[in-house]
Amino acid sequence: MSTSSPRIIIVDPQRRLYHLVRAAMELMERRPRLIETYSGEDALAELRAIPPDLLITSQTLHEASSGTTLALMAKREMAALPVIVIGEESDPELDEETLAQSPFQYLRRPIAPELFIRSLRIALDGPEAAPRDAAPEEIIPVPPLDYSSEIRKVLYDLMRNVNAMAIILADRNGRVLGYEGAAGYVDRDLFAAALAPGFGSIIKMLPALGDQPRVLKYYDAERSTIFGLSLGLHYFVIVVFDRNPPPAALGNVKRFGGAAINELLGIVGPVAFDPKPSTPALHPKPELGAKRKTRTQELRAVQAKISPDKPVIPADIAVPSSTKQPIPNFDPSVLDALDSVDLAQAEAMFDPDKLEESALALASGNHLTFDDALMQGIIDEIDE
Image (tube, rainbow, N blue to C red; front, side, top):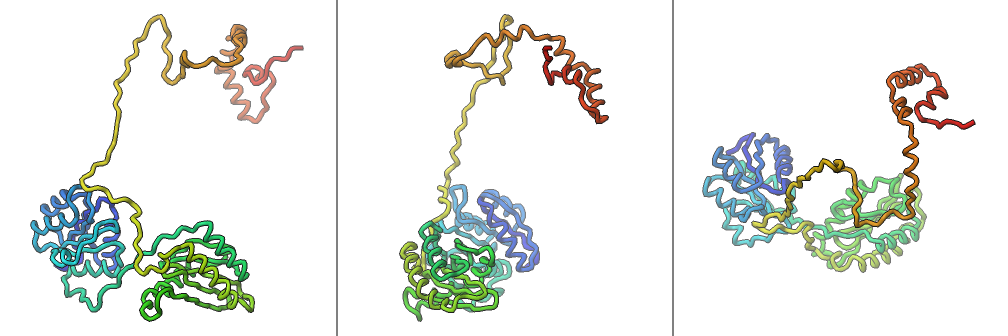
């Protein structure tokens, strides 16, 4: 089954697995033929037409059947076909007994890239292609944290008390959650990404450290001096000083930083020290077999009867209804001036000879004469 160009059928109504599979296959230096489908019926039709080398399906599908059901149906069609089912965080977890008896691999988001590539190697090249020396590391999600005004105030006060240049709040995935001060003069994303692995490993050290550890990291260099303070197990604070920090910077950070971390922990809550937090699903899980509800309203075409005695009014001209209130303080005498309009002068404005003379005059750079301006209606006649 090992081939450099495997034929892989992907079933995903959300259209997110395609790019994941392609990126993983490029890392494996494979050039696959990916067939993207959005329903189990289409996947089975492709399977019957040309036997694939691998089937990858999402656990949640739009039809009544799930990804695990599709995997069993595909195995009935091709017993030797490897199948990978990928579940979302909002999908119900499968028990250990079901996973052990299932004839497919089951992965659940978030998925470590190494684990996904290993599953692909097993599916395409067999179990011997990816021996398991150690169990894969469990991926612990980072609980969401809102950078609220309360957190901003605590961080700003800490930056002012220690006389720092900037202060940054980040999580153990290296993502910047917020910052205060002159953080635009430093590479805050680089600082967060470089310090994240060290603070992320605190969870592994809990058996040796104990519950609720406090961590302080110190980096003194030529261009900047930074301090890192752990905010529970999932977040950390970076205090940035310029080239020459105050002599008492270390003591101030330990004193005011400890008080600020305690105040922030009260805002974040118990989830800060939860070693296995559960994150809520960003999008609600769609009900299986549920169709999208749409409502349309069809109107019959209105055929207007044209009377020869009444003029036809274009549809784009708004006609005030008789039920609307009249315009206040309207003087009908303003319409009497229409009788005094000289239509001959209006026709002369659009005379081709006059327009040509005006265009030539403008093109030659000459100024518009008084007679031309009077003829074109730019100015009115002056009564002497």
